[in-house]
Length: 234
Image 1 (cartoon, rainbow, N blue to C red):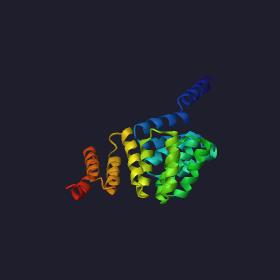
Image 2 (image 1 turned 30 degrees about the horizontal axis):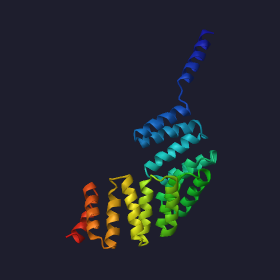
Image 3 (image 1 turned 60 degrees about the vertical axis):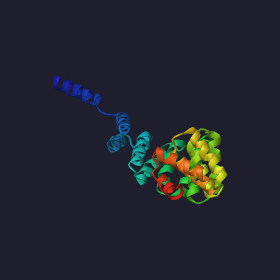
Image 4 (image 1 turned 30 degrees about the vertical axis):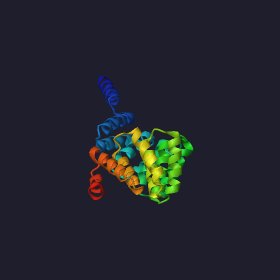
């Protein structure tokens, strides 16, 4: 009887120290926060072994795979997350980003449209849709998307910059200058905004203004500006 009692006691002690899926997820999140993405994936693998229907484990593993640029693997994990929880905007967003980086733009658009359906205030989604339209050479449509992003988040320098770039490509140099200037007002060290504002100014024959902006871009660290300075600012 004593032996049986000891065995039962050991059984309960062993189980009390057993790792749960949640424990592995927490350890995975800690490793991900420390940029140990491969280590984090191993922890999420263990969580999934214990609980094959844990959406958090699939989502976080997909997120780590994205950091490692394993976008196809990330998409598979986000697919599984969506099977379990079909109405989480952030999962569609991350899956859309993975598709975007794979240049599967049409599929990415579907995901970002779903994000907006679930979260109409997602300025980031409108911005990415704008970038997709840009990649598809539909600059006018891209501007409309950036307009929506700016309406929701008027302090997003990247939305102003991207809208300015679309205007520059449409040869609306004055409109581009306005948007690049707004981006610079928000972020005074936005070197590529100075660079492209200089291009727009040059197109309008404001050579002194162009050279000033290229010099500023170079000072901040955008070395490509010095090529234009050497060519046009003698």
